[in-house]
Length: 391
Image 1 (cartoon, rainbow, N blue to C red):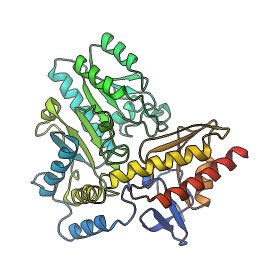
Image 2 (image 1 turned 60 degrees about the vertical axis):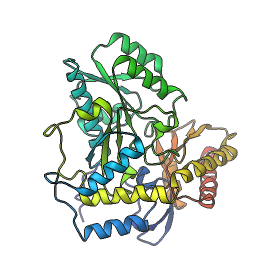
Image 3 (image 1 turned 30 degrees about the horizontal axis):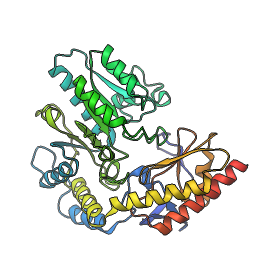
Image 4 (image 1 turned 180 degrees about the horizontal axis):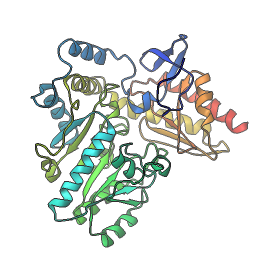
């Protein structure tokens, strides 16, 4: 039988049939611990009763009408997000890439409003912002850009976690109008910047008249132990993008803005057919309500510390382990050699993980993880890494 799917993925040899909480079961009824959460999407785990009830109820009422009409649930979700983030306005899309596209357009509108003919956005090496042409260009990974030239103009590249490099740009590039940066680089290898990096970046943006735009698509919605990663430093952005766990698997993205950046979009400036439809917004509201009512953001901070300490205790002195780092339930174990083979080896043991930047084991477990489940994960990962490095 021919496979009619485009060959865009190197899929693992498993088909999942159903799940509950942190666990998945395949079509052979084999159980797996999901320590990846669908790449930071299912923060509440699988088949969470609150999301299931909300989506089921909404599907029986109204799924879509389009943004030609008012959508009460969209307004309610915008209110909740702005309250949590201390922002002013929200544009809803369907994905992180689309949310970042909205941010890029806001930055260009901002530049033109200041009389800059060709406004440029500063982006970082080893970043990841999406796979549309603009977000692909903004991404600091030449591998995923190759073959899609010509890329989009209007981006300046800088090293991550290097405030002096940005100060040099401020002195020499009069067309720069914004900085787009991840508070923690996910695809780049769970790269955590210096404690004062975002604070200094906020100050530099203020002094230079730049917008600070934070891509919180992977770090947002409680993953790092705060609603949003910038809240650890207090470096509030002008623009912030969300997606992934906002809908716990229901596709939804959001671009939040405050101050002058919140007033740039006008009717006709931007749009989305599906963005913010009743079904997606109902899911987003259920996620936010559950994060609050079940204290899951505090749980992410607690379990994240437990995992980090446990992994450091079991692997910290192991030859071949370069670093173990993390913030909340966003952790990386960097090895001294490529380790993509670990993904398949983990799958055989009933564990779902990811390897990014060739050498970093990325762990993004659901925010509902318990201490006992965290201990199981530490045991599995420690054994896998030890055997891999021995072999």
